Image (cartoon, rainbow over all chains, first blue to last red):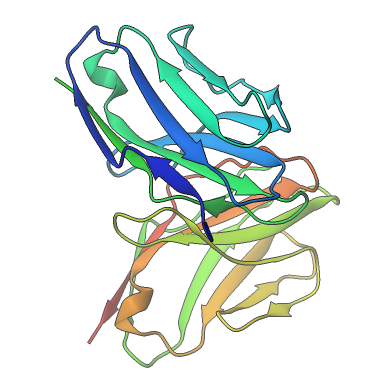
Length: 112
Length: 110
């Protein structure tokens, strides 16, 4: 596709459940980023990949959060044992370094 | 990455120029100034970036002071569609981690 695609656009889950969020970057973009955004706040950095490897995962809040990008294209953000505080919009972006970031529309996660 | 300071909100009349300031007094010589904006319920969108010279593209102009400690994003003729949160970011290229602050919420008024 022409832009960054994120699925699902909305996800409602119960506390304690496991969630996967998918990001399909722009074709050819080697760098991929995950952010999360709470209401009224700017995007908060979680992790970024250069190719298949996580170049910087310093923003992952704890070990319940994990992200993979096995073939250097699609990435999945995995959240285990979800908590109500995990409710946010999860944004994915891609770039061809050193160019600018292109963001998807986000996945809105609600944990009940 | 250097920290930036922006006013939390601004208003601008439709058709007038919107001038959004950003302070980045601790910027280092190899850090660029980037601007993104985020329209409600959408992902952030790149606007413009610069190192030390003023820059202009089809969306906006970026004016960076000579000492590089501050900059201004100029939308020359603001429209209602420009209502958004505008983020000023400084970062090293090609270092890729991009850190967003709270930004400036620009309201364009008819």
